[in-house]
Length: 556
Ligand code: PEP
Ligand code: MG
Image 1: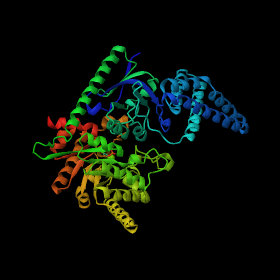
Image 2: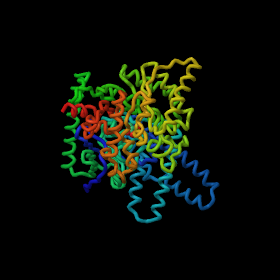
Image 3: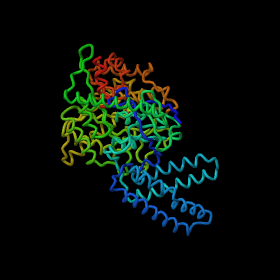
């Protein structure tokens, strides 16, 4: 039966084109289990993957049998149920199906079959059966733990999925770290129950140029694994189980979008350097790129970026047990500098916290009462000086390969600015003492807390440039959590108070002759372009996927 679910449109089609449409089979992922690898195996790996499941199951059975001998009677009854479920054919058959027919890896197949069985349990309104569903989840978690112990590293989804049907990821929630792991081009669209337009998961989806809908509330309950679905990100609607006619219409729309995008790419590579963009007053407009990973620099260059305006380095730190050390960070920053071939590169210091937590194993205060107002971004860095110094040293070392503009997020106090300067000096002294060469950096601050926007002259005293983080500036000015779909209708960068802060920051920077950019989502959103230009903004930093549309809008 065809039905639709409404949510908040965050993605766009390729190149930010209007055709924000994707069709495909639903793949449901439960967020607690996204911490394991999801990837396609090849036909000749099927047997090995089936063996992995068998070995994990045997190990789990052995472990439970020996634990059950020592367990008190009440517990051993539960363990018997778990043992029975572990050896149940419905689970085994389903997992085999997903591995043999769909070429999912073992962990993914287990998660997928769990969804199928859990949906059957949900249909039975019996408290006893609900309990059994929890048992089943625990059994699958135990199996996944066995598998992950044997192969702990997270895998990226394979790039080549040409032999597979197009897939749409449906999840209750996805962390930005999970989302970045899906940058491998496997999914054609994303839908999550929760999230706001500028949540970081939405931002990563947008950077992928993939139609996505967040805040679709009950989508993950209503859609079944393998259902045909249509993500219409233009309208913010998910259509489930469409009729063949509707599906064909949308598939046509999707392929039209693809053809238009390929034509655009061909045209772009012919004109390697896009023509300079000029505002009405003849001044030049600079188009910079927002990136999450060093490998994104190539897409930035290909889209004609005139530099990197924001490299969100926290993506190097999320979703992993070991934080990157100085050498790993140095290599990442150096790679971006080298990839950009002399163009300006702005690297933001780690902005962890709120909807970008570190892996739970680091004991980062996930449980802060109000994480968006808590120990986030520069506050966390200053509370963890060893970590911050490591990052600063890595940045200074990478600057040997070309000047780096270092950008500090979420500053509000002059005392924080002074601490940052001291830390930078200390990093330089440490390297001088060790005779490690380091290079020139520029220093900039993000204006994303209203308090900062209200004391711009103080910021201008210390910094070489400023960059407006309109995503957070909107969140903090309006006291609206950017990741909470229940207040998404109140999240509005066009609110006069937000516009006032943006305009006054731009004007004061321009008057002082210091570079000012906007790197929040409004920079690549055409509905804001004219007003930002009128305020005097000339530096826009956006996803590479948005640049083509942005240029078209300016030329118009
Ligand atoms: C912003 O807040 O506008 C910004 C660019 O930073 P982030 O989205 O990473 O918080
Ligand atoms: Mg921000």
